[in-house]
Image (cartoon, rainbow, N blue to C red):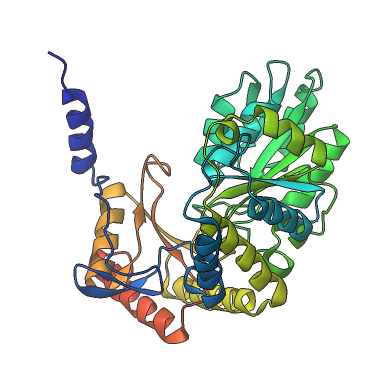
Length: 392
């Protein structure tokens, strides 16, 4: 008789190794302080970098869109699901990113799947940083392209791979703009120079750079002044923008091609009007002022320097993502539990998301955190670290 015993065994193994975690069900809106099982906790794991999930302009836009358009779009984009609000959002995104066009998907994950699976064929090669996000890896798996990996941010190895790949029809170098587990920034200028030298396309996933890097949060391409030299910019509407969705900013010909080829676009109902309106409002907030981004970076610099001063290993962090690297999965999760007892929600991240010996508690600093919040977290970190033997 068919049964799920193999799945139960795998889950039991995860429990024994300290890697099992049930879903956390919150009782309040997303913010810097949230309620879990009646307890008020300082949230240090949210991707809500700028606090826009609760911004009054975004809420007003969402409510207005529901009143005007209803709660759904009714169809996929290629049938009746493209409303004028979707078209306006893509025009605004393209203008914001400095590209000819933009195409919106249901999530950043499906954007990578849709774009990579559409542009890569059996005569092409994709060259990917070893620490790229799972959505990039899965997007590549959907293709018949040849696959090559270069060591994390290793430009010598990237050049060697590009040299070896001269015979392919298309060469596409793919990198995260900001790496989500380590909080470090891709060496995009060097990648672009090598790609230009060897006639390759550059593809950047700015999930954790959208709204964070660049003028007014325009992303890693703007951060490095590389407009016109990065062929494909993928971004998210689910993190700093405060809503949900993903997009690709690109040349007009690529957008038109993806409309006809990208399966997540072709076979998924479009964003709700409320989500599209929320994203439009978020772009306006970003364009009007960079005060939230300045606050975000000031908070990140303060918190990271203090964590390092305590003696914790923050790896290569240089953004608001600040990992505290512990190593052993069980010990990592115990550290996260101790922080929870102290009133801090900071999620432990272990294998298979990161290497087995690279477990870490990942802190994400936001513009919404006050210095008092950050000091509260630092004091809890010190106590939990001493209790677990991570600090002397």
